[in-house]
Image (cartoon, rainbow, N blue to C red; front, side, top):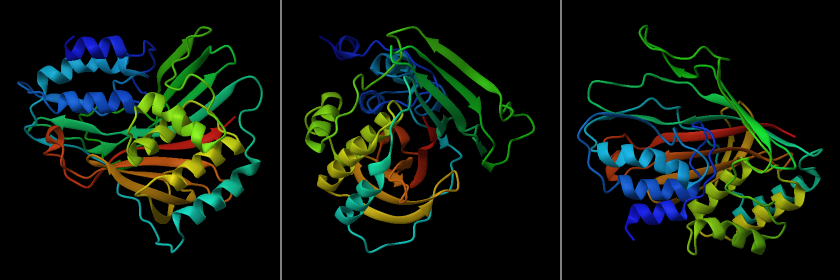
Amino acid sequence: MDELERLVRGARPDIGSRFDPLPFRAEAELDAIVARSTIDRPLRWRVPALAVSGLAGALAILFTAVSVFHAPQASMAAPPALEFAATEESVGHLMSRLSSAAESLPGASGSAERIDYEAWYSEVIVDEDHAVHYVQPYTVSRVRNADFSGSQTTWAGDIRWGTVPADDDADEPGTLLEELTFNAGEFPLVYTTPPPRSASSLRDYFQAVLGDSPSTGDYFRAIHDLSLEWVLDGPQMAAVYELVAELPDVTVAGTTTDRLGRAGVGIETATRVGFRDVLIFDENTGGLLSAEETYLGGLDWLKNTPSPTVFSYVSWKELY
């Protein structure tokens, strides 16, 4: 069985939105294949845009990426790095404190779960004659019903950083970009069952997707993916904090203000090849505010991309 056939057979069939971030499994497979590829024409690639939930969606862009990747000159606009105020608090103490704060998190109310978030993913231009001059995030609202029917709606956000050239076709903020509906049983999920309420069970739950030997950064990305799909209650968040406290190579980044202007405290790890991952939490509620990844260099397919560069962020809004 060749590699592509193996990927197709192992892929999840769920089809989601082109605005969905790549879940860990698809992102890792895509990175590995693109890193071995060659290019013979320019490529405008929004990373990890054009993506859908599950590896099956990633394969839709593999055929393009594999045939055209060669990395002449990469150019991309990105948000500025977040600034953190250092703290002497240990990871274990912080996780314990956040777990206590999260005890009152109610989880989803009613028979439907709604998750609203702002997201931005890098747009890499592999072409000497082009550049990305501005950062325009978008807003997503995902609603999943008890029967796994639901909807996903995406709007263009405000231009946050940079300037739109006169000849650019940037979307007017608030423009409806995409509206998807899903019948019963069709809502696209990487994690198809509710998350458990103990750290050991949560580790097994993540490893069913990540594989047997995930890095700490892989677990950070799994927490990010899970939080795009499920509204976590107090015990479920406590399991997240207990698991993080057990992971190696986690550092308290300090206090900061996230992309939506909210105060929070961040933890970080640089254990995923080429990237630093950051999770930012609300110290008062114990909820997850934001997740970010920063490119640190060392990947051939991004060798002309400056490092460090903010590569993506998600900031959660109201959870229902």
